Length: 265
Picture (cartoon, helix red, strand yellow):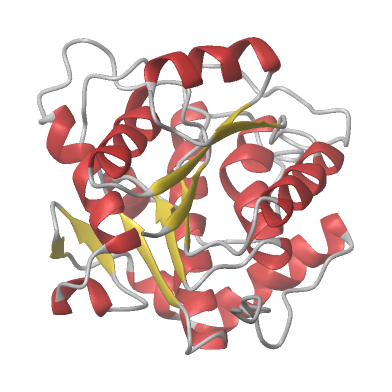
């Protein structure tokens, strides 16, 4: 039995992945941004162990979420599912950051640094192929806001982060997943792809003994590897993103993850 944290699991793909993992007999830690949504998550995923609370738009609350996760016991996997879509305007957080960047990119970085696990899964999108790897204006402070482009950029940076972690931490399986355009609240009711299949790959990567799930530094779609934006594999871009996230949070990605488990007996 694996212990898996699924961020953003009060609805959509996160809830679906959590339900699939519970059905397979795994211990699932849910996550929501508020206590009200945490109660909804627990009601929707019977059998989940607990629902942790923390707003990923806040650096302080993301730090606290990492502490909650570590207090729950050693994690076997984290599915970084939570995300903000492209339909809203530029919203600035209390930390002075673009909310879209804070939730989609900075929070997964901070949770990875503070609550690592042997398997890490980062949700991206097919839109990442239209992302711009330029790191000079991550907060969209100098450019006119373009929600669709900002979202594409963030999803590219999720792949960059997944590949950077795979390179830095060879003992960890770190991958990105494209779920497809599925009918969630973010995707809309007319989205054409299979919702059930959209949640399956991240659950599979987080717990499966299938040799195909043992990959690292790869992008997947429906349990098959798929080519990603070439920039995601560029070492300079990977290191640049890690440095930018370290500067914003004050937390560096450790040289090695702390994956120690308590001694048995």
